[in-house]
Each structure stands twice: as C-alpha cells, then as structure tokens.
Image 1 (cartoon, protein in one colour):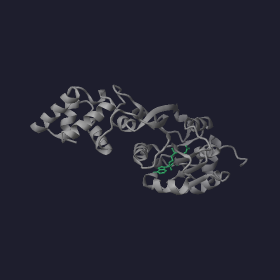
Image 2 (spheres, helix red, strand yellow; image 1 turned 120 degrees about the vertical axis):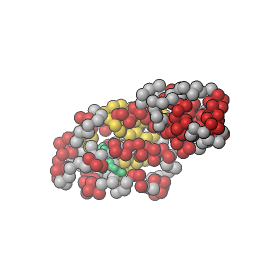
Image 3 (tube, protein in one colour; image 1 turned 60 degrees about the vertical axis):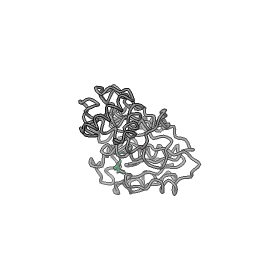
Image 4 (tube, protein in one colour; image 1 turned 135 degrees about the vertical axis):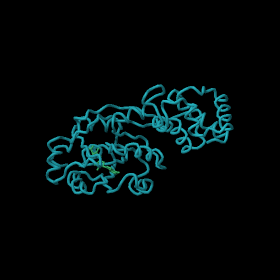
Length: 295
Ligand code: SAM
C-alpha cells in the first residue's frame, strides 16, 4: 500500500492535476470527487465485497476506482481521455486488481471484455460517477446490453435521477422513468452537493441504484417497439393521450376507429394525460395496439 493519502481529497486532487499539467475537461464531463465519505457511501450503496467484479465508467484520476479496488475482487475501468492514463498508472499503482481500458464506453464490446477480464463465478456490478453529458445513453446502453449486471450504482445530475426514479402523476415521470423501470427497480440512494467536486459543476447530483429485475404481470411484445411507443406518448406532454396517439399513428379515420376500439378494450380514457398511466398500463396498451396492427 502506498503512503499517499487517498486520492479523494481536494489538496491531493489539485496536486495531481498540477503535476501532470492537466485541467479538468468540461467537454468530457470531468468533475472529480474529492469527498472520501461520499465515495465510501457509493461503495456501500453498491454493497461491494470481494465476491464482486466491478465495471467503472470514467475513472478520472482514480478516486472512486481506488475505493472500489479496496473492496472488490477486480475493477475494470473505461476512460476515454488518454491524457489521464499516466495519472492513473501512478495513482492506482498500489492496487493489482485494476485494469484501465482507454475506450469510449459507448463503443466498448462489453460481452467480449467481460468474458476476457472477469471470472464468471463472481457477481458483476457497475459503479460510476458518470460524465453528465452522456448519462442517459450510457444507462440505456447498459440496460439493453446482453451482459447482465447484478446492480448498477451511478452518480448523475439530480434532475435526471428524479426523472429515472419518478412515479406516475409526477412532473418528472416520463419516457425515461418508464423505459428504465420497466427493466429494473430504481431508487435514489442519496444526493450529493456540488461542493463535493473539483471543479464544482453547476448542478447538484444524486446516486441512483438500479437493482433487481422489475416484475410486471405482463411483458411488452417487443422491447424496442415498446420504448418507441412510450417515447411517442410523451412527445407532447401538454396534450392529451389521445392527441399523442394521433401524433404516433396518424389521423386517418380508420386509424382513429382502431385507437378508439383499443382504448375501449383496455378501459383507458382518451382524455387522460400520458403521465397518469402506470408502466403496466403502457405495456397493456402497447401490446393491444400491436394486436390492432398499429405498433
Ligand atoms: N470517477 C472520477 C471521480 O469520481 O472523481 C471521475 C468522474 S468524471 C464525472 C467522468 C469521467 O468520465 C471523466 O474522467 C471523463 O474523462 C470520463 N468520460 C467521459 N466520457 C466518457 C466515455 N464516453 N467513455 C469513458 N469515459 C468517459
């Protein structure tokens, strides 16, 4: 073990950046966590033990990676910024259970990397302080990936965290809430003030935990068609569900008749607003519109 203090403190973070003549890149969402308590709480929220393999997205200068490596069996971290590689080489040198991959997470072949890097008898978790500019694409990519993760614990902008975890009849409830919660149970583990970072972002953050598979009595006939249908239902939030449906399917009289028949069948009023419908109702509706030849 090194005699250095943990990476996560403001003085050491600044010293590391100065030594390597680096400044945080806004374009890559580089806001480094400097609060050790928060890092420990993240690791705890993910319940990391030496029975876990962990994928981290965006290790930065290694503050979270270090705390993960202390508890996990192995950590594989994807960092897009090659200027950070020599930094990580030095800061994480005391740990022999970390592999850094210099790659854009959205372009990585996760099934192949997981097979190459990890023993399959351990559970697989994702833990990350996500770059905020691509939070949603990363989450959707992880959820759609053939690799199955036991738990995903990720930091993001508080507003996005609220949208992901929102329930019906809430202003934050929309297509993102439904798409994520149709697959996973989602909760906000805790919130993080902007003061915990160097440099400080101009928004507050929250840790979202995605765990067990969601369980509904009914499944969408096709996941990606379901996602498209749900997105269409929220294209015009201020309009009624009926008007959003006309936006998706068109205004042809025959189509209107089919829509009316489906709404009658599933007992949903056309004047309702999309945000009043539960996830289960969206699944029922999507499947019924499919049977009617519309989806
Ligand atoms: N984990 C560090 C921490 O908590 O202090 C840094 C987190 S910082 C919010 C996000 C990190 O993601 C940065 O290091 C950035 O370079 C990296 N990053 C940005 N876009 C990425 C991408 N597409 N793939 C992999 N890493 C990315």
